[in-house]
Image (cartoon, rainbow, N blue to C red; front, side):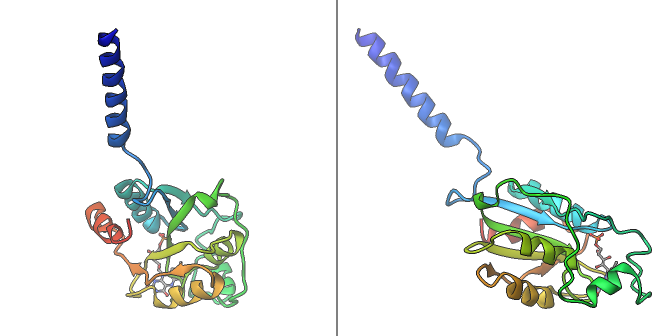
Length: 188
Ligand SMILES: Cc1cc2nc3c(=O)[nH]c(=O)nc-3n(C[C@H](O)[C@H](O)[C@H](O)COP(=O)(O)O)c2cc1C
């Protein structure tokens, strides 16, 4: 009888230790972390994938209903799709992808290419599509040369005034997973 009791205690102890050691995707406080991104030509996608891998966050791609062609992306043509959209701050191009349960995320890393100094309009659609109240949004971006996400940070704050939008960061497209992990570690 005593032996059985010892076995039960041992099993409970082992299960307890395993539960504590179990790797989790959750943020330290128990909130899950999301890396959401838009990428037209792959640079931001690479950064977002490395960031999600390095932090154990969930990854979500903002996929436009109508994908951007090379002609759409021609910034030298003021009539191209991107030029027209970016010329109108109220432009909200449709998104094809949906997040299943945004409520589970407290921290959202939001990635995009800098277009005309700011976030692409389809990112504005994403921000308008969900309730970000009480969430922390941390922008990150790739760009040809624009050094910061300053203008994007400001726009994002206007679109989601009830979220805590932190100062974002622009990364070179070949930024390492280690550097991303260190950067994100400040909030995780
Ligand atoms: C329409 C358009 C506008 C852009 N505007 C800027 C800009 O204002 N400043 C900048 O440094 N790069 C600009 N770029 C370059 C992109 O930010 C850069 O190539 C980025 O890494 C692309 O990311 P992606 O491959 O994830 O789409 C622009 C690119 C496009 C297509």
